[in-house]
Length: 165
Length: 191
Image (tube, each protein chain N blue to C red):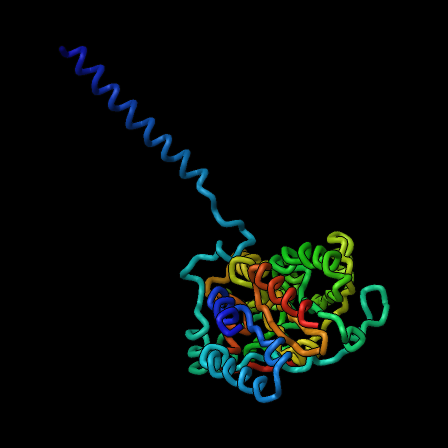
């Protein structure tokens, strides 16, 4: 009888451990967004267009550094007032420009990155730019969530824009 | 016609702005005006400002990637697909094989594709042109050209221009290619 109980509890223990092991293995193979995908940016590090617009209206000019990390031509057509173009985050040269631009800043400088070249999940620029700033130790980095593109999600909503360099 | 346009827009409410290219083509002036007025009334609430659609396509002259002169006005009499794209734009690259295929298939019916690269320099555009075996001209765009076309503030943007040089549709972002091809066929048939 005691022998049967031992076998029973041993079986239960082995079963549970195998279940945990399998669960862990499955968890490891869950698809995760590519590091270069905007989907990899944590949700709490995103800022919505309405929120950024309100923030920029309410805060002192320059208190938040807003950087466009996408296309120069699109920036020339229209960009967020006061924002700066620093090169495409999806390319090494663009990341280098970004690093140079922020090199002398305090690590708690609020920074907002944006692109808007393409639909969010297709953007090749924001995730790498975000990762580069985080690696440098910046701890107040937000990324503007642009679902479709800058025209549809910022300009068409009536938020202010500037043209030119 | 109205139902057809409404259906296509319902399928793709935020991405395509399609005009009427055949409205009143075989009717009198009054019928044409009434038809167009009906379309405007039927769609005004959803399509308040269809930038560029039903307007003459802004003319431009640029050198293509091989320094040959490209003048949009030279394509009058053809249906033109004007594709604003960039090498870093994944949806743009996905569309291109279809444009290559259409250029081949519809060439004799008077179709002409034309690419406008919104890249900063032409070297990357040249590489893509070669890799994708593009069989149509590609010119380099700039902010001025983008503004002429109602603002290219996200890619891709595809225009369809009829044989009279009038913009008949604008497609923003990733669009079902069948929608573009359906409109293209409509324009090719409207001789």
